[in-house]
Image (cartoon, rainbow, N blue to C red; front, side, top):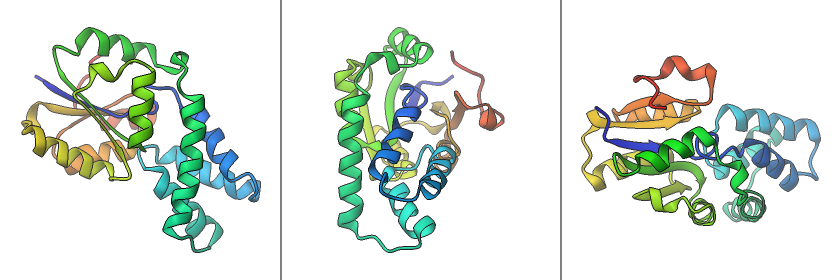
Amino acid sequence: MIKNILWDFDGVILDSMKVRDWGFREIFKSFDNEKVEALLKYHTLNGGLSRYVKIRYFYEEILGKEITENEVLEYANEFSLLMKKELVNPINLIPDSLKFIKENYKKYNFHIVSGSDQEELRFLCKELKIDYYFLSIYGSPTPKSKLVKDLLDSYKYNHTVTCLIGDSINDFEAARDNGIYFLAYNNSEIEKLSDISPLF
């Protein structure tokens, strides 16, 4: 019997992947298009990773260049400004998830653990008027596995009644690393990794 549900955000609560694809194209528009598309492929395969990791990956692995921490932060801030402007439209909320959240937030302990920037995440949840349904909202730059660990420790949750709902391999790994259940959502390629039956 699940009591605690940790939600990923992008692709699970908010249909934001196309907007985030556009955001990466926008902040890297001065670079070779083929290399930017390689980043977007990495971004799609690793939805649960933070933009800080993806920006560094673009420079170090795709471009073969060094990038300073300050430069990573500058790109991340530019990306965040674009997201805050584009993602506040409630039309991007995923209806099935939203319905389940609204109907069950008193039955379960809901939290958000996301690869999205924490400050941006809290801003979006407040603007979309959904922050009320969650006991906590955590995001990057802290890696997801650590976010989950810290949350479990802080709330003293029993691992056997806790699950993480996510749409990427990174979400599965964060759940596995912390010994909690995983429920794949909105991604047929990882459905076989689910430990429990769909809740909605």
